[in-house]
Length: 487
Image 1 (cartoon, one colour):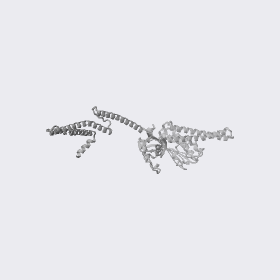
Image 2 (cartoon, helix red, strand yellow):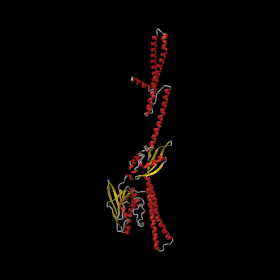
Image 3 (cartoon, one colour):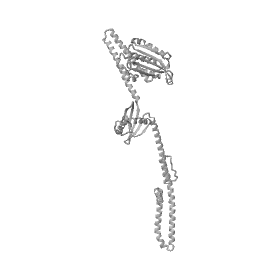
Image 4 (tube, rainbow, N blue to C red):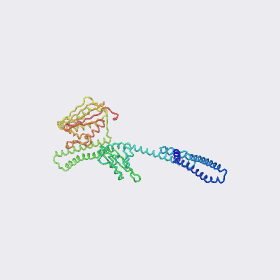
């Protein structure tokens, strides 16, 4: 009995089974009705052969029922086969095989259904292919974007990002403790540096552009609402590292402010003393000569400032012309030293030259630029050294990491540089001797910046060692051999 119920259940849960059972029930009902009406007339009309006729009628009914069952089963099977093909094709398409087609040759309604199904599958395959192509195209564009792009949904979950955005998200999510305020975080998946801006965009639906400082870096952040049918779906964040641009902009502002300040003072002095001469305020020739000397000195100072300014501008623009050639370093230092002998006697400062006895040669160097470097360093040493002290110039050959370098040093016994100022002395317009009187500090604040740039052009290195009250030593390392990158 169980297998009969199971078989009946299987038949009843399929369209073909329901059709077959319906036909069988209909045939049985028809036969029963005919039997009920006809059997009662057989006894009246056929008294002698009534039993045989009833048996014949029953046999005929059974044969008719069996034939009906056979033809009903055949019809059901013909209907079931294409339906099963359609079912298998639909399952295959649902699994991602969009090339599946149904092969039915009949021209009836089932054949038309199969043709419509194939047309629908073909259009679906074409649509999926186009969507896949567009998705790959957008993914390629997204990966090629240098900025970090992150898309959040309305719950703060990340739904799309490019490689830069993925790395930045991981980095910023590890900084949660640094930005934590002790409050309950509503959107923990949104990185803490942009969480406040994300909430504003999510609630107000307006784009926000901001700059945020994360540790030592500056980031430009643009957050745009992602809308769909006037409903907020999420937020798209585009994040760019603008640290270098921020530094350049700050340097530009500082440079303009400093150059204006440096030029203003000599201009005021030139204007004031020239007006004094024009108004005949000064009577004695001696005082007049002093004023003229001040005007001359300030004009020279302005000339040095303008020349240094032009040098820095050319260096930053990459237009500094370097004439690389063979250079005898000892001969160069001897020539520079001779220029300061008279100056050293005037200031009562002893100039000591401790040059290497061995020949020091640079195969690829700009002699004029190196002379500018040593002139600047020695001039600084004299200006910061009191009378009775020493300025020492040394040269030697050293080997570091199996490579030969020429080591040059300019050392003074001056006032020294405060330790907090040493990291900044190669910056433009930076002066460690802020309290020094202007007449004693005639530098423009650009000299060491130019020196650093020239040494970098030679792929060398410059370092400073200083202690307050014990003097300052600048040490330069220049590579002897010609490197491929210097060709």
